[in-house]
Image (tube, rainbow, N blue to C red; front, side):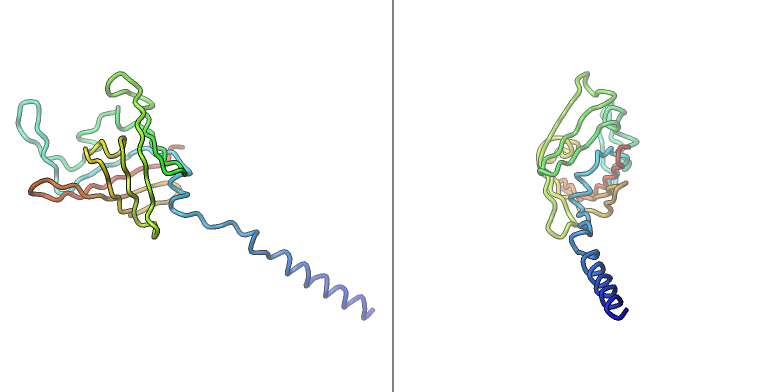
Length: 168
């Protein structure tokens, strides 16, 4: 009976040691993994202070909510994909701005501390006519991406806030 008890305790100990392997625990997702795991749709774009736009009648209007006051349906339905190879695409999937289904692309890289993304190329950066954008990530999860960037004119620094939602 004593030998049975020792074998039983030894078997339980072995099961405990081998059942709790660190290899079984999934690695936590990085922000880069989250960004690349989803398709995103822009759901907000604001600028502070308001950005002056020249109207057709050559008057100027200051706009802070670019998403609702400036972008039409042809921009609001675009799908953004950040791929794990460091490239991104923007596809015009619904209403077209110029009659063609536009697909633009560029590259992206996440900072080592995962607080910023640098984007180059067309697509996203062409919205604000910059060749490179540096995004400071303020929120990123499996539902939402919020990031800020700066644009500059000769006299003013503007904070631009992007909000994206996962396409479901």
